[in-house]
Length: 613
Image (tube, rainbow, N blue to C red; front, side, top):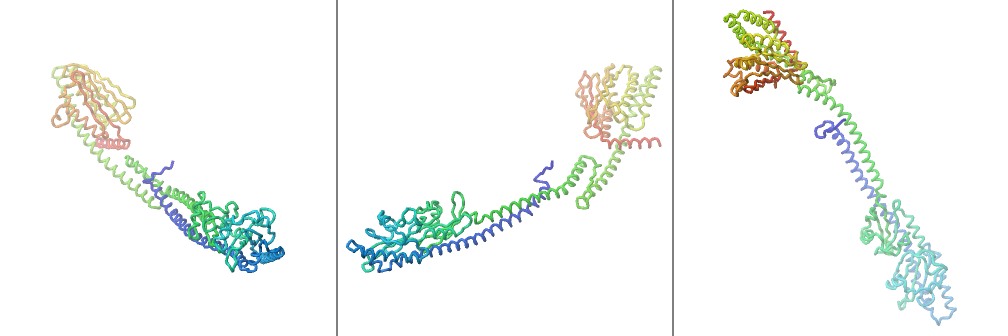
């Protein structure tokens, strides 16, 4: 499984670099483009929305101005004032009929000449009223004229127009749901006395106003409506909202502000709004969800980020590809370096490329070649030194061994025991054939045991005591190579110090086992053992204080052989209990195959050199 170590992988750094190179400019350009485009589009939309709202305001103001002009026309007619004042109980019916015909004809003439004025009324609170078209006096009689708020507002305004909400006309036709109109009322005055003598009601065509509003578009779902200065809805396609203040509180606050543009939220959705004043003091308001203004930009931004993510994935794939091309040979080179660090100088890399990694691999192989040759020279010189030191040790132990053996034969001859002397001399001859006749300094463990067996036969003659040898070799240890006379001095010390000192025989046991990494050899006897002082003396055998003793010579020989021929960690440990015997544990770490081959080559060279001599 391909795994990343974030902190120290070249591949990770390369991928991060590629992502940074690709993603950062893309994100920067995307955000910059979005914000710049959003600003430009919003500015254009703002200008466009303001223009649309202005056009709508101009169009509606034109309609409302027609109503206002019509009201001025009727208001300024002195003849209308006179005929309205003649409507009294004492006035002859003929006059009333003539007056009604005159007023109705006058009002109908205005209606026919105007495109946006639907109906005109002249209302008299306590008597007859007049109107254009299919005016219905009976409907007027149903109401108290002054109960209408917009009539009272007209009285308050004292001659100015009072506009009211979009509604169905109340005084025409036979049914209730008649023409849709926007009434504007003002008081009718007697110019001579300036007292109120009636009310003029101009009904602007509400359908025409709604058509104008419907034709103006703001986004896909945006719409326009009209409010008064307090935020009450006066004209809207939604008839249920007319007459009430705008439902959204944030929108209501925005309508009371002087700003022509504003933003607010409704049910969590942001909205954009624009408003323009109308000629009668109202406001035309247009609102649209903000996403319809910047929706395409947001879609474009998402596309930019999606493409950025796609390019990021592409960058990761490319980064992984090139990272593998780079890190795989580096990993191979690192693995070979680990092998070299563990001591395997045969490790070589197989990277074949013309780049820096290939050159580094070639230099690594050449360096290992030179290092291997140098190590071979060092090993060869070390082996020569070991062999020279071993020859010196053997030259030291051989005279000691031969002196003891010849001394035994001398005493046998002196005592006249010629048969035993002859037997001892024959055993010594066989021992020399088995030991001194061997070529080289190394023998197998089995050969060493054979030499010890012959050596014990001489010691039995020397001391006239029986010595039993118990040998137990584990599987695979018989052919293990050791220096000659590695164990023999330990057996001789066991005989001399363990048995002869008490003038008795005994048993010596030699056990060997292969533990995997080393060969464990155990030499034990059932002799007299050693006191703590004697054990300390033996443990320090080879030191200047006891180097000349027999025990010192034997233990020094064993320790020097272990140090010269076996890897570090090889050792000898002596344990003894007075009256119970002595145990010597020798641990020999196995030398590497390469060291064994060099050792064998050195032994062969020594043998050849000795033969020439």
